[in-house]
Amino acid sequence: MTVLVTGGGGYIGSHMVLRLCDAGEPVVVLDNLTTGFDWAIDPRATLVEGNAGDMALVGEIIDRHAINEIVHFAGSIVVPESVVNPLKYYANNTVTSRNLIEAAVTGGVKHMVFSSTAAVYGMTGLGPVSEDTELHPMSPYGRSKLMTELMLADTAAAHPLTYGALRYFNVAGADPRGRSGQSTPTATHLIKVACQAALGQRPFMEIYGTDYPTPDGTGIRDYIHVSDLVEAHALLLAYLRGGGASTTLNCGYGLGFSVRQVVEMVRKVSGVNFVAKESPRRAGDPPAIVAGAQKVRALLGWQPAHDDLEDIVRSAYAWEQYLVRRNR
Picture 1 (cartoon, rainbow, N blue to C red):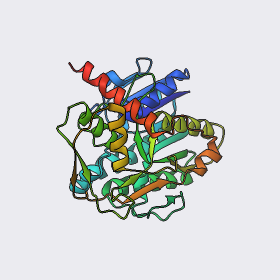
Picture 2: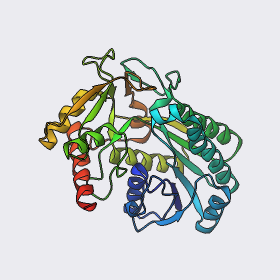
Picture 3: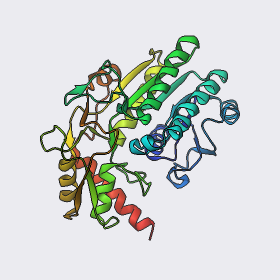
């Protein structure tokens, strides 16, 4: 069984490729390398450079490599950018996914695992959100991902395709063996930005919003280590292969940390008291979003190995140090 990983040169995708290759699975990566990196892709995988929405190309890959499953990461992920440029997100996320799904059905692909997001929930309050929480995405990014979830559900009802959608919370950290990490210099992930500030790559970082109805006024998020996240993908793929029904699962720890808490942890790990400036809220950001993550544990037997903020930050900081050395 060969697995097609779209967006396998990106942050999470490259970790998924490592996980699959470490398990001895044959892997094909499809990535246009606009935000991903060819050097981040495990050499044990086969790279095809191209767009995941190119149905002819995807069909050719499915036929040539006997693809049975697709793990779909390709897409755009920056919430504020989606507010400013919504059509980019509906093209890169929704339209691309629609074409990929059609190519999968035409090619007889059996299973698909989709990289969704907690942004489908929108304004949720301060408590954990479960998979049956009402969906009110606040940004085009969240809506573009929700549209793909709906397309997958409709397609699975009409065709012999089963799928799993994983709604990520805030992904952070890097491969514990130092083989991959968040490599995009302009990425907006809080932990990456804070690590860059600690290393002097930014003169300061910004805390967006200090007047939220949270204990310290800053936004609260559930940070999940990327290695735990891809382990959930692997378990979900095994579940679908074993005949499991299509499902949607939250992927987080059920632990919330504020922006100020994260900043202080990066200061502790790095030993650098970098500047964190307070700025107004960003459009599309809810005050808090924390996972209700019982279902993924119960259904897949998922047991996170890195559910500690300091562990997450240390691996992220080590990766940023590696990137500094690599780019000299």
